[in-house]
Image (cartoon, rainbow, N blue to C red; front, side):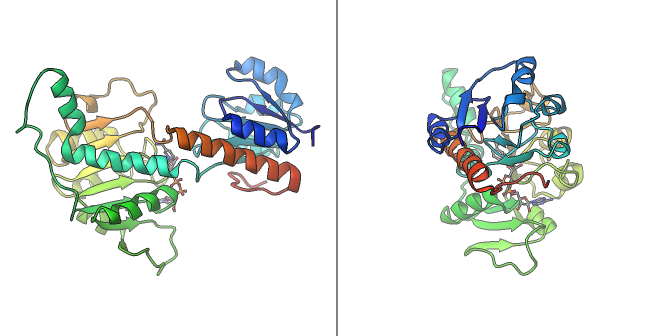
Length: 316
Ligand SMILES: NC(=O)c1ccc[n+]([C@@H]2O[C@H](COP(=O)([O-])OP(=O)(O)OC[C@H]3O[C@@H](n4cnc5c(N)ncnc54)[C@H](O)[C@@H]3O)[C@@H](O)[C@H]2O)c1
């Protein structure tokens, strides 16, 4: 196995590197390579491990004559040209389960922050103010939470929301009809979820079907004063339509971790008091970063040692 060479091109935890080395893989850690540098050395490697910084382009893949597998520590593979990888017979894998708790907890944190205006109150306090009336909020207990996308993260959020004594609705078109819902969670249609929820949290991929799923028409069907949370992918909400809905006083507030364009710069949405935001922090916890790196290392070892493919993103 020591003739199998793996390049770790973005920061991966020490534990992950050790796991691969102990299994007999020869691992080089070279973080921060310019595309030209990566192109020069990639030909020597059988495995490439990245997070989101390294761009695995068609050009890089064309020069990767020995490459068998590219692994993304995380979920989104936007930085990997998956089509080109498939053409070059390179397996692409990701690590979907490692950051589900982190992303789910951020969505729940946003829900509390929206309900009680915590970020706005903090900013006001730091200006030396004491505005009790302005920051009166709403309670979460007894409210209805709509979870759009009942996959890894959506399930984490839904199950915890039951514990918060919320009424929980979930919608996922890929669930088999008649699927049993976990206790306390009601599987409903999209329109039912949109019309009944006090809070809606999105946990869907960005696809042709989900692009601008929350546009003018859907936002208008949401309850007046309800809240929208997006810790999934920018683009599933139409940011202009969201701005219009908030500005018109229809939606009560929105919390956004992801944006159509990232970094997003100063958006019109940020001029609104009831919008809170974070710079794509869903997976940014110590625990998640470590879990996704170790998961990637385990998949690589299984791939090279046992010829097993786990967490495949493409089909060869
Ligand atoms: N903010 C962050 O840092 C962060 C971190 C991790 C994941 N994410 C994103 O969160 C999203 C969910 O991740 P996951 O790990 O739960 O993925 P997942 O694949 O486990 O779940 C996604 C679910 O969405 C469902 N779905 C697909 N199209 C749908 C539609 N039109 N309506 C409703 N449901 C639909 C799928 O059937 C699937 O069950 C992804 O977009 C991922 O990239 C963001």
